[in-house]
Image 1 (cartoon, rainbow, N blue to C red):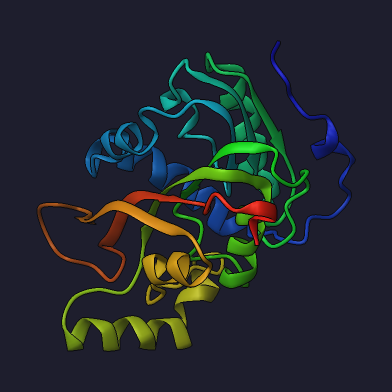
Image 2 (image 1 turned 30 degrees about the horizontal axis):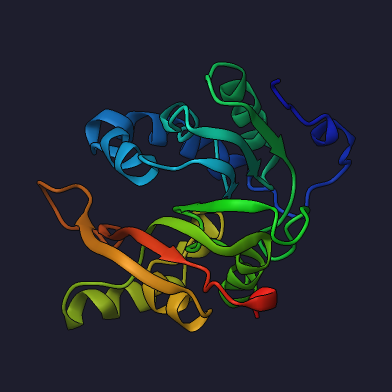
Length: 230
């Protein structure tokens, strides 16, 4: 049975609203599926998943069509109203049941230990509190639950990392819906207590100029299989 939330229409005001950037992102992300090879990255990110999955920061729902049939349900959290509307439309077109709901990464509106896997796809760059968001991901995963991540962050030599830090301190977050280019997602996952599995650096675009947003990490981590998950 397809599960689609009606709660989006009941939220009078979202705590996250970036209408100008959301319109730009919706167009640019669709173009990036082929131009930057993002469709292939999404396929690698999600292959082999099964059970109940929570996707944090689903954007306009471009991951949805890549979920394998072994996934029983996806609960997709998206705080930005325009992107959430587009994600709802994408959910109607995909084979796997997807429930799109409003919510912030730092306070996920779901029960503890309710999911077999979590997907983080270009979201840690823009959350307000990375440590708190990852603590929430750990809370909602069952012990031994899996995290699939594809995130951009700090990379390159001294000149590039200086550029990234400067952008984060000045115009970049204001222009890009709160995005930061110098965060370290792999280190953040480790600090949050996740056990890191195979992961690798991915450059986007893989050909052409290297940009402050080019340094990405694609991989898997697990919540430790421990009593209480803490």
